[in-house]
Length: 162
Image 1 (cartoon, one colour):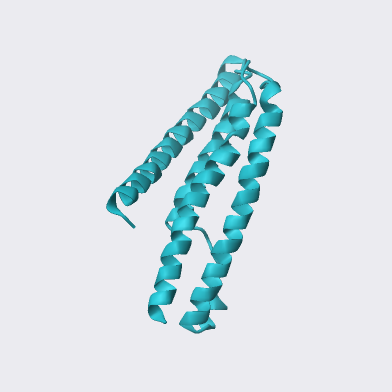
Image 2 (spheres, rainbow, N blue to C red; image 1 turned 30 degrees about the horizontal axis):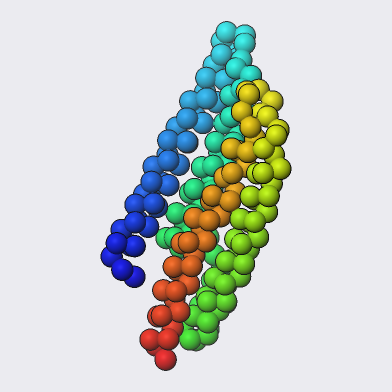
């Protein structure tokens, strides 16, 4: 992989990680404020729960893309550890291809859903639901880029072995 491309993708992954951290901090502050104002002052912000929910969706999608890039998702490898290295690599390529197919569906359907929800507003604030649902195609696209690179790296490794 050319160094500029690697640096750009590393920068994107780093940005996704930092954005996820900021979203987590914002969600935590909103929920804490919601709980404190409700129990100590007898009122609550009507928007905080809804906004925190959609911030969590964005956080999950961005974090999942970084986890996919780093191969950090949980996997059951009991049977693959019993396979020959060549078969295990071939199965990895097949799995990565299936993941790319799923991500293609996620991106297409996520975009369609985001566009459909464009006219719907949040119940508590006057913002289009498009922005909440946009997390699906954006996160799916990031995951597709990272998984494509994982697939290419694994394919090169497999063919170098043979």
